[in-house]
Amino acid sequence: MCLVTPPAVLTLEMDDRAPRRARQFLREARCQAHNASVLDEAVLLMSELVTNAMRHGAPPVRTEVSCRATSGMQVRVSDGDPTAPTARHAGPDDQSGRGVGLVDMLSDVWGVDPTPNGKTVWFRLRE
Image 1: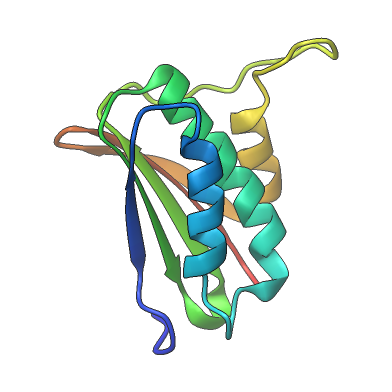
Image 2: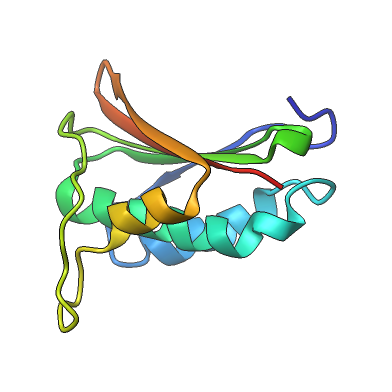
């Protein structure tokens, strides 16, 4: 764990502003000492996961950002629906359906953990 920046948690309301609030939270909560080079990717992927939680999950939606020092940044998005996200094959004209694919492509590792009240989807980006 990072000795500079403690983990940060934000619970989101189920509304259209949640992805924007999550992006802002991540920019403010990230570790200034270790996570600068992965910030853009982390913001994009968090936005995708929060959007998925809003569209397909259930409340409460909670985000967590933690620094793993030189091992990178870990982001977790939890919601109250136990159903794991699945990758879709979005066509070129589709407005949605790329989130899980982006997480798979851009993160170093990601996964889904069941929780007593739903699931947590997480990813890690290395510096």
